[in-house]
Image: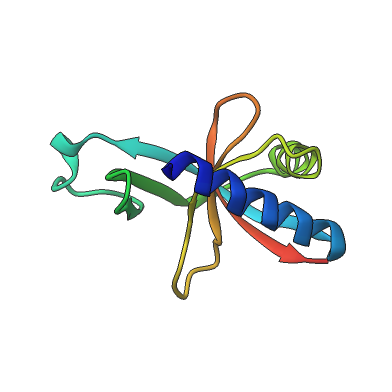
Length: 112
């Protein structure tokens, strides 16, 4: 049931993306932190998906280069990005995604 609702939300976002052109303007690399290390000091920002209980460490000091952004935008336009989490709040990133190669990024999806 949960996976079905995620795919419906992603499809709605994709339909909206077709009406309004969107692109990924910025991104940073993300690591998944095991529960064992969640209380250890971290160099990056840590976000927790409360539903799946996965801890994401954003390497905000290491922005993606242009080639990574190009690949992310290509995956996004071809509907090959797997949106793992929507980021709420006052951050410069809007989603945590997995690309077609299995790498995880925090991205800002913005209107063109």
